[in-house]
Every structure is written in C-alpha cells, then in structure tokens.
Amino acid sequence: MVTNPADSATQTGEQRYRHLFDHAPICIFVIDLTMSPVTILEVNRRAELIYGYPAAELVGIPAAHLMPEETVPIILTIVKQVQQGQTVTTKTVSRRRDGTRFPVSVIAALDPTDDGQMIVTVENITNSKQRRTEADAIDVERRRIAREIHDDVAQSLAGLRFKSALWSHQAAAAPPGMSAALDELLAVLKTAITDLRRSIFALRPLDLETLGLVPALTQMIDDFGDQSQLEARLEVSGDQDALPAVYELPLFRIVQEGLNNIGQHAQASSVLVRLAVDKTGGVMLSVRDNGCGFDPHQLSPAERDGHFGLHQMRERILDRGGTLDIHSALDQGTELAITLPPITQRVNHVAD
Image (cartoon, rainbow, N blue to C red; front, side, top):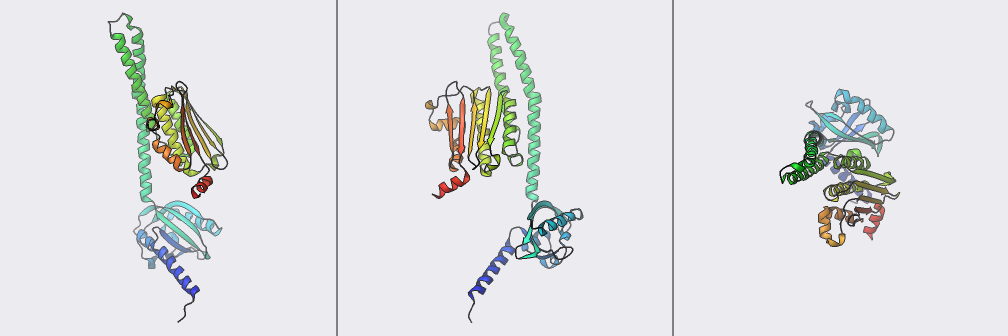
C-alpha cells in the first residue's frame, strides 16, 4: 500500500492538534456561532475537570448554561465582537455543574478554519484573585500602620524634639552636664524621627503594574520628599510610549534604591530625578542630590556598590546592555546615572 506523503503530514498535524487540544492546561471550547443560542461543539479534558461535566453532556448545550444568569449578556457581547473579527479578552464568572461559581479569564476569537465557529479559552483565576485580595489587604494594613506612625508616634517625637530644643536654650543656669544631656536627647530624637520617616516611606505600597511607571515614580518621589522634608522632583521628557515594558521594573527599583541611599547618607535638601526616553526606546535616567557627596577615588568599586546597595541593580542593567555610573564629589552631591539601549539595538548586539 502506497502512502501519500501529503496525507501522512495532514494526519500527523491533526494528531498533534488533537493532543494539544486535549492536554492544554486551560479549558478550551469550540462554539457554534450559527446556532441561536450559541452552543458548545467541542471541549477538552481540562474543561471536563473544571466544570464537572463529561464531554458528552457539554456538547450540544448552550454556552450560557455555564454562566450565572446575570452574566449571560457578556456572552452576547463576546459573540458580537468575535463575529466582527475581534479577539476578546475579559474577566467574568463561570458556573460548575454543582452550581458553584468561580472567577475566570476568557479569550475568544474566530476559528481560523471556520468563521461559523468561535474558539474560547477559559482559565480559572480563583487562586490569583485570592492572592490579589490578600495583597490588597496587606497594602491597606501597611497604609494604616504608616498613617498611625505618622500621625501619632512621629508627631509626638517631633513635639518632644521641639520642647527639648526650648529646654536646651534655657539650660544655661542649669547644673553642669544638663546642657550636654539635652543636646544628646535632641540628637537621639532627630535620629529616631529620621528613621521613622524612612519606615513610613518604605511601608507605603506602590503598585507599579496598576499605576504605570511615571505615575508610580511621581507618587514615590512625592512621598519621599514629604517624609524626608526636602524638595524632590521628577522631570520626564521624550516619548513615554516608546519605553520598553521590560525596563520599567529595573528603572523603578533603581530610583527606589537611590532615594533610600539619599535618605540614609546624603544629608541633602533637594533631589532631582530625570527620565528621558527617545523615540527608539533608549532610556537615560538620573537621580541627583545636593548632599554631602563623597570622593569616589577613596572607595573601591566593591565598597561603592556595597555602600549604595546597587550591585544587583548594576548587574541587571549590564545584562540589558546598559550602563550604571555613580558621580560624586565632596560637598557637591551625588548623581546616579543609568542608560539603557533600545530593545532592537540590544537584541542585535546580543546576536552579533
């Protein structure tokens, strides 16, 4: 018997498709769009497991059967958009055979081989939603703690510091040693207040994914200025839309670490953060303060990285083909300077 190579290749492709369809880690439905209401033509094993139906019971029933009644209009909207050629991504609620509900992420698109059919993937997002809920609860609690520290403990210490300063001025006729003791108390209070402000700044959560890089940086820098009682500004120039998404987290962490170092070491009264993005996606970032600075020649590279906590950050930047430099001089402030190349340039460089 002679086997046609084309037929053999087709059969192999169909077997591979069937294997992928049946063993995919998410639910897959093939929906008949020519029926009213739209009905299920085919399901994979994951759908059977998640929904609690055997495939034989799912095939032929309306897709709306797997949705709570109040969410059925979502199906009608999805069908309409898919019939117009759109790929639809949404989150909604689905329903198992036993009636229990669970949150899902849905992606729907026309079957590329049959425009009378729609392919729908459904992912159970119960765990991720729970994690998000827990993360939100943690963020709320962190904000509450930060607010209480700021409104109660920090304010009380600030008041005590003010009174101690008055006592220090009135201590000229006091017994020997009292003036020195008051000065020591003032120094302790100053340190405690500084540490508390740093803790408040660290406790306030920022959701980079939700806010986006520039709004998250703006909030972080404003909070830092408020807590550190200095002028802190962000200047952004260029094409923000050209900024590669993979650069956002490392840039955010660099600024975060830079501000933390300024708060601990710089004794600065102002901070300026500059972010510039060119139209090709290349990035320049500068974090500069007007603080006490230091002599870079007196520190080894290892000491410099250790002092600024930037060793891992430098590696991340270098891995992306960028540069990270620290410029400083005694009594002339410090600048943290970062450059990152366009993604295409970095890819070409790696390929070379």
